[in-house]
Every structure is written in structure tokens, then in C-alpha cells.
Amino acid sequence: MNDEILLNCTDLHAGYGRVPVLRGIRMVVRPGQFVSLIGPNGAGKSTVFKAITGFARLTSGTVTFDGQAISGMRSDRLVPLGLAYIPQGRIVFGQMPVHDNLEMGAFTVSDAATRAKAFARVYDLFPRLAERRTQLAGTMS
Image (tube, rainbow, N blue to C red):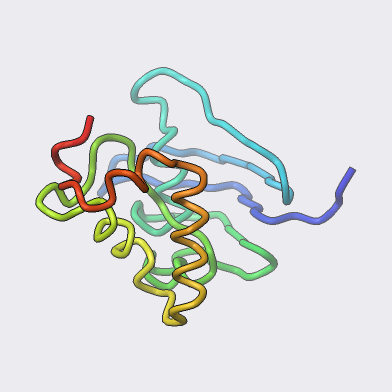
């Protein structure tokens, strides 16, 4: 078993305003692992990810990502580290083409060759997007 830890959450407490949602959450993710949180609506699944990525206020506990302490770090500072919160649902820029939407997700990558390689990988994984790269994202199912 790999002892290296990619994401480590210890005793997380978080909520919204004066409403506590998380009380003592612990989670360890190692490189290469797939991890899921399962539970009913309102159980706090989204809040766990929002607390990790700075969208929900962490009242106590610690989060480290790739060996770096990130507890309470702003979400825009996490993106260059490779960590982002992507909410569920149909959240796209509907009046922009598919490719432009993908470019919005790559705004932190300044090297053109690296961006081109990333787009090629996405289009390889999702060939239908390649076919529809000029289609308005809001017109897709």
C-alpha cells in the first residue's frame, strides 16, 4: 500500500454562517485512489468539498494537499496547485462555444503548448466534444 498522502483532512468542522454542517470529518486520499462520498441530500457531501476548496468556512481542522497546508486558502489559489471544486449540474457558459468553455477552465495555464496538449487530451477522452467544439454549450444536452 502506498503511504504517500495526496489529500489529508483532519477533524474538519465547517458550515454556513452560524449553522454547523460538518463536525469532525476525516479523510485521506492517496495518489491513484478514487474516493466517493455517499449519502442522502443534506448530509454534507458538497460541504466537505466546499470546505476543502475554500467555498465554505472552515471553523476548525486542517487540510493538506500534496504536502502543503491549504486550510482556509482561497479557492483561486488552489487551482494552480491542481485542486478545484466543480459543482454538479449544468453549469456552462451557454452562449459560448464548447471550446471557449474549455478555455475558461484552462485560464491558469499560460503555456500555449501545455494548453494545446490538455485540449487534445480532453478531445481524445470525449470525441463528441471535438465534433461539437464550435457548438454553443447551452444547446447541448
